[in-house]
Length: 173
Image (cartoon, rainbow, N blue to C red; front, top):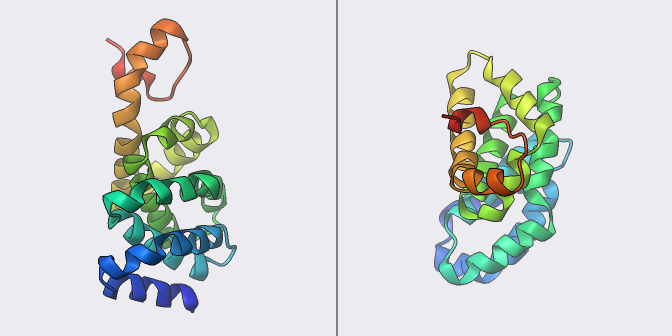
């Protein structure tokens, strides 16, 4: 499949050559993330994760803007429900969740809407009950990506605008 080829190409081509085509890759790969074919979406998540992980400082802003424009993080969040209902494979969940973690880590403005998605938090709590250790590690990385930003801003926001947040009990004294 073409998405498998994209993973191989991104893995082997030096970053200096990829930088010229970064935005094209991001637009194409992010649009395929919501494919109903797991065999297409999973390699796209892997390839996008490689792209984001190897961004140069000069292209980071443009790529993050492309991710915002294509609503990549919200597409991934929306696909969690499909996984929770058993419609998607574990590998798909792991790879797209790792991609989401990478996006949240590198692009702080995306953390707050993702972390405040109550449905997502319930789905993740249900998934956390599985015994597969690779899923638990993937969830830990996602929770870490969310908690860093939330922990920095939670005290400030609760003084001004009190709200319920799934992680608020973690920081209560």
